[in-house]
Length: 103
Image 1 (cartoon, helix red, strand yellow):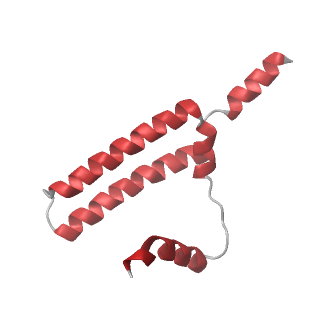
Image 2 (image 1 turned 120 degrees about the vertical axis):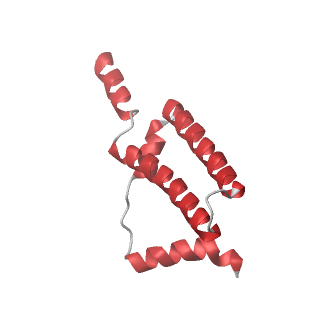
């Protein structure tokens, strides 16, 4: 009985498909931000973009390693896709929450 509980607990604490999806989308977001920064400046040698990229990438790697050791189930939950409402409402929520301070 104890061995089945232990194996069930070990199974629940592993990274699943949604966790991997969350990790991959996080890294893709960092690379997209770098590309947008470099395209907007017009040159590849802009130091500020590379500093931002290095700091963000190192933070993301440390964050993922720590969560994999401490609580991989949290990565699984954050990677889940939850379809709530239609696309327009989700886009407006994203836009308003992120960019309202600019106005």
